[in-house]
Length: 459
Image 1 (cartoon, rainbow, N blue to C red):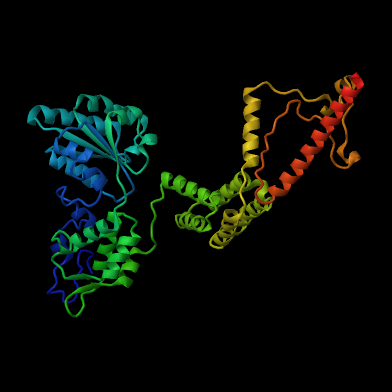
Image 2: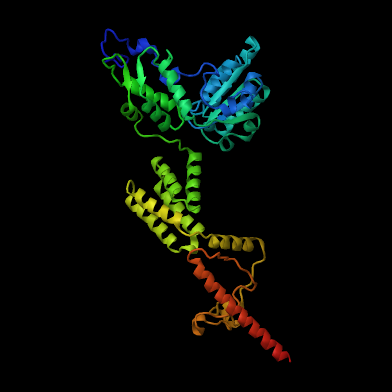
């Protein structure tokens, strides 16, 4: 069969794909781009009447715009609509393939267009984060002078990927994943509009519609691609209708794809750690599952848990660091998919363990003292007596060996009274706190005895 011929049923009766959709066979998502702001789905937080971006478009009063957000939420469509609404020429460049020479050529054409036709130019740079600093800087003079209106689109946080000079000259808007109802609206429009499947008889089962709306993660392009695959791979039934049921929908989507760029990577890892720190094993397992599904490095996950075991659990449960370290070694040896079980065991243990950051706070405070304050001299009794200088200066002369006096010796270890390790008494640290309180009492008794002896001697 010719790849342009999708004759469902009777070949003589059914139009070819070329007849239905045009010779180019544009993807459904491209055919269904909105033609007006009213057809645009989602992003009401910036496009509803009275919102800043809507006011800027309606007043035709803006210089540059940076649109950021996950894939498939309408960044390119919105840029095209802005150009249509403001009657500006729309020029598209790619951050992946375009060069400075391409930018300069379009700038020259924009100047001619403004001079000859009195028409503005919107320069749309898709994936602007792919432009290096020199490429972004080359846009500045003509953006500043108004030769072009720049609309940049990126799936990354523009604060980190777009130069400050462009950011300061632009309105910055974050686009959000489409809501379930927005996805349903997109799919319904595609089924009824002649640009989509309006000329065919397609019946999308309600549960299939719900599945698409749920599994596509707010990605409108992905939902339309899945619908297109489902329709074009399903033959016409005897009643003349293409029936897309749940089984067909699930097969068309195959593996669910998550938006897991750099920002999502760090945000999910942060939520995973904070869920364990907050003693919520269910949330911890959920974020673990999300990371595993997205293909996160299992060694990265395991390393983060080892850090948490020490930073947030510490001596409240000394077994936590041992278990986390064992899990890290085990997942490296075993790999996926079985490593998921080991990671889940470690995550749930750490989430439910008693928590203490006393050791973490102690080292931070001690480091701050070392870095900012005068370094404390080491008491002579603690210094090494074996070197030539140590022997000459009687280092270690008054050192009391704790094991010779029952395991605890009252002596000066730090020169100044300072308490870095502040235990609250959670978990095993309750026993540690009892021991520290006992040692403190012995020191107080020894100090009182020494003071009393000094007073008697003075008499």
